[in-house]
Image (cartoon, rainbow, N blue to C red; front, top):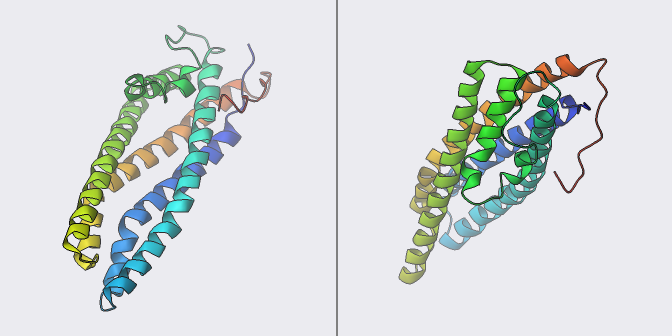
Amino acid sequence: MATYPVRGVGIAAAIGVSLTTLLYVLAVFVPAVVATRVATTAGEELTRTTAGVTVLLSVPFLLAYLCTAALVMTWMYRARKNTDAFPGRPSQLAAHWAVTGWFVPVASLVVPCAVLAGVVRDSLGRVRLRALVALWWVGWLVLVAGDLVSRLGAMRADVLLARSGATPGLAHYRDAALRGTVPAAACLVAGVSLIVLIFRISAAQQARIAPDAPAGPDVPTAAA
């Protein structure tokens, strides 16, 4: 059976995860740090400065997140497809779930984790790394839920400020950073765990398919 190279796309995905994680954490805490440094300025100036910093971090984060998502799904698809060529019992989930599993409502809460756990089992056969998959997935779910709660809290705080006619002050930005502490910590846990998994799985699969096994065609862009 054809196999797919995973080292190159794995390195790119790991770099993307690192950059996305860093930008997310910076976006959570840097506005509060900037607000602390310019707290003596007028309220409108403080708002403009922190808003500019937020945009400066948010736009690169969004771009990095979208590119990283495509890279991670491409890597997962290739890694899952490779396991079809390895000896052992076949996986219960088809390879396409490495991509579509992220978008199906409700199933997206479980399927990506199940796909990667199967890849670890078929590539490494180590229970401890399957535990790392669980750590990655718990971190991801806490990040998603915590980020939603944080954004809802920020919207509520903005509404209260608008009703009072006040401008955001230092306390406003410190509260925002405090709300983002949990999702930022979860982002670090999920990011580091996924990077370790990517490198370990990629190394194990390349060792099994190289140098004699034929490499399969690139994953179509639409599937990524």
